[in-house]
Amino acid sequence: MSDLSRTPNGLRPVSLDDVWEKDSGTVYMNGSQALARLPLLQAQLDRANGLNTAGFISGYRGSPLGGFDKVLWKARDYLKKQNIHFLPGINEDLGATAVWGAQQVNIFEGAKYDGVFSLWYGKGPGVDRTGDVFKHANAAGTSRFGGVLAVAGDDHACKSSTLPHQSDYAFLDAGMPVLNPAGIQDILDMGLYGWAMSRFSGCWVGFKALAENMDSSISANIDLSRIDIRIPRDFQLPEGGLNSRWPDKPMAQEERLHRYKLEAAKAFCRANRLDHTVYSARQPKFGIITTGKAYLDVIQALADLGLGEQERETIGLTV
Image 1 (cartoon, rainbow, N blue to C red):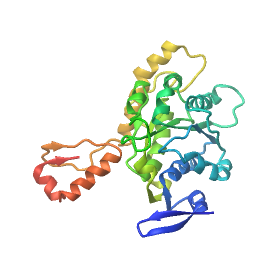
Image 2: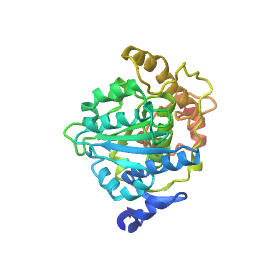
Image 3: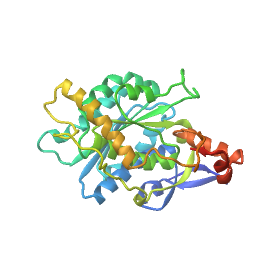
Image 4: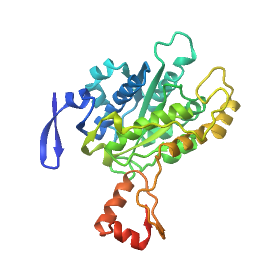
């Protein structure tokens, strides 16, 4: 199988088998393929760590994730080999409810796997309609070797929507940490950190997917050696941990979320330097804070302005 994908030199055939079968090195892929490749990397990482996990994907398509389920259907044979099940939802909230159920597998006896890592996807307005599930499921928590990424296809510029939308605040309202990939390589790398954060903190983790990333293509590095997940040493888990359990009363969930789970997510961020200084002046006078795709835009703007290392140092610019 092959698709025609645009490269800097024009159109060239890209083997779909190459996207799914390679375990290391670089693979030319677009944003939707990277998002579909991510669960395969998680399965590979879990095997390397001696875990017997499965994966579950559900949600509802919509631009910029309009073709995501099509990519998953093309990859279904490869996903099945790694015990990853794709079941598109009738709508966004039913898909999220199914993902919530996948985090309860290990509460009961007879589980076939150590955990089920899960991925929900939906367009920004789908995030809005799924708020009830997000709040309940995030309060209930994730399983120790499961974890959830909630991927929001955001359309800031209203390119193909009836309203511009930004899902960060809806996720924050549900008490969910948010990761904002800057590009396709970040989708792969940050996605693995996101599942690890979800397992450690017990939180569902919001994950932004912009049209600029979904519609672009790069040669991405899929070597797992890029990933060095560190467990925080400056955070003490409470008795009973932070993952899902039964029975579990609502007020206990509320206390656990705000007293421990969100703090655990912050500790994970610190330990793995997910927020960090890129350019640091010895005598800083100006600072720029940027995230996601806007980070790449800032770096490009500095280059266009001719602000190299010496110039940044002279004016005291830190990013």
